Length: 284
Image 1: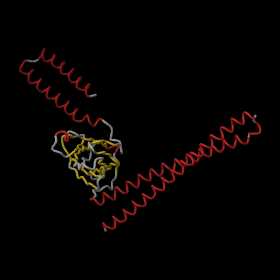
Image 2: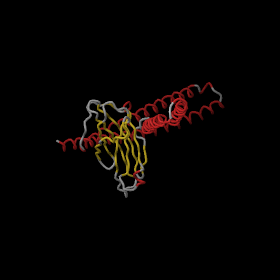
Image 3: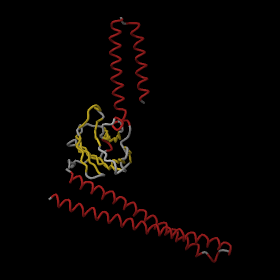
Image 4: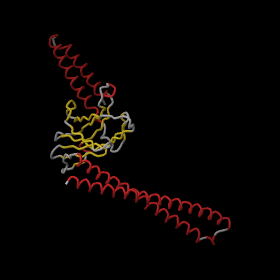
């Protein structure tokens, strides 16, 4: 797309140049060419500045690497009444011997040369919240995360996380929280994510139980028709029954592990709820 755009400008400039060569004096040729070159530069520059925003919004929970860091965009919300945007990040340091400082910048698609003010709250070692005020008619933003260093190499190492207005959750109750409020927000977020995992595993249990029921029906059908088969056919049927019973055993063992996992998730939620109550009591 970038190549086609520039080629189109080039072709138009050639056509205009031919026209001027035939119809306009040298003085005006020079002025006109300068104006056209300037216009072409402006248009191509604006296109190049905005080409990053041609990509889709960054997928939630996808991991991006920045040196010794694993970065995930966990959630994004926007209040259309105030222009406040909130971006929740998980940033895991895979090398605890490195104390890495980070820089955060946000630019909006309509004016990529302007860095918006950001407020970054480090909730704990792994969790961050980034706040910023956006123009009311924004279309897309790019959150740039880089290592805060004097090294030129580090400054060129950047992770870019994109968010379009279409893919950002609207929350008219969204307000900028302090560190304690962000901590509670992350707890609620984690509880919600764990509940999703419980739901997935409950569906897995339902699916396994349905399979067990179907297999048991197949076994019953084979056993009910035993007297109508020859000895050789019964040998084949017995082999199938043995295989079916092995499948049932595997599914039941899988259910046991899944139920243990669900119980663990429920315990985690219980602990998070306890922590949230204690934090709220501290706040009060």
